[in-house]
Length: 226
Image (cartoon, rainbow, N blue to C red; front, top):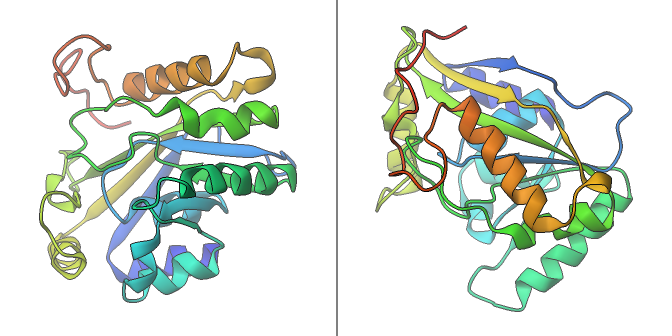
């Protein structure tokens, strides 16, 4: 399925750049927590590291991408059912206990990539219960010159097909995935600390302002891509 994710990126003309400390080959009970911009995010992370994502059930209906997501073992949640969150947390607990890598988007929704919303700390509970290692990851979509590409964002009332058309229309699109130092959940106070630490590290990678300042305001002028 990692091969399929890489193939999909190539078909869409997306070049993947991965930086930072990726999970180790023999590392077990791993969680990847990333910011959320597009439906592409799942395949960007999976292309870098085999990951079972927690995602909305509607993804199953997406052409091609839905098939890949399901075959990759995506854990689908029905967001309209309140009790499904508890079921999903238990399922994530089981998957981590089996040694698989689980990916999630703690913001719970997509943005243009110019801000980092509050993380839902409850999503980190399975990582705490399994003493897993959480790898914070920052996703950024860029033009060939390194400038941000907001057209990739899957926001507002865009349909999936409209969003895919926007992605295909880009030239020289780069998906930059940067990992921060992992968080050892065996040594944190609980899920709130794990969520706050992951949020802080991802915000730093994205050069976003610290919590409490207007969202999306850069902490400093954007630097040239490494």
